[in-house]
Length: 253
Ligand code: GLP
Image (cartoon, rainbow, N blue to C red):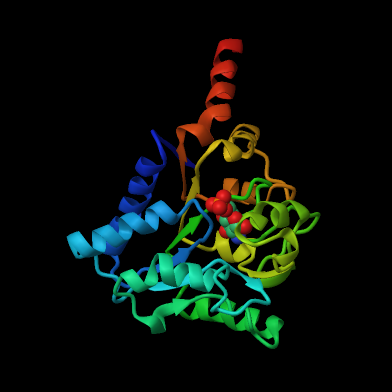
């Protein structure tokens, strides 16, 4: 696991966008896994700048989003489809046919999940997966639990996620209580993973993840410790407790 600590959110976003830019330059038909939430917003902004000013070409890129609320319509401003369209897709030259976001209106969610997983396979898997992390250690919407769901599935959101995500909705009651998410297995099959964490709210979970070095279903992101190509990009705030802990480890040893 490579750990990179950036000075601030802007530098973190710049570094993440550069990694994605390099991957697209190396493989113009990159299969790119995408995330939502506040953390990747700066990365999308920088990628849009690269597209406009440096001609970064997305025409052959194939994208798969991690998750979507369920049920939700794509016109709902809180849907991840709406988020992706307005914060990224409509500003770049990605081919709409190459965009994949789980369908928050699928009549039969279970079979939709199977089709989504098969589509990823048809494209020979994800080359580079961008990830954020929930305050409770979730990735995508893989919530802490006793068991791990391996493939794309319909899931119930945890109380802590409903609370955290209610900031985007009028109230906690308006947050859909289910979501379609890639499973930990779908994520772990990505060839390369880029995990972003920014801000003080993520400091505790990041320190736990990086110092304890234990894989547990109570921290879904800890599965990433088993992957052989993960880059963790933090800003100073998210890295705060981790940096303190490793410093103490050295002074104790
Ligand atoms: C949401 C998404 C996750 C995201 C997480 C963190 O629940 N399903 O994919 O990583 O929240 O969001 P933020 O970046 O806003 O902290």
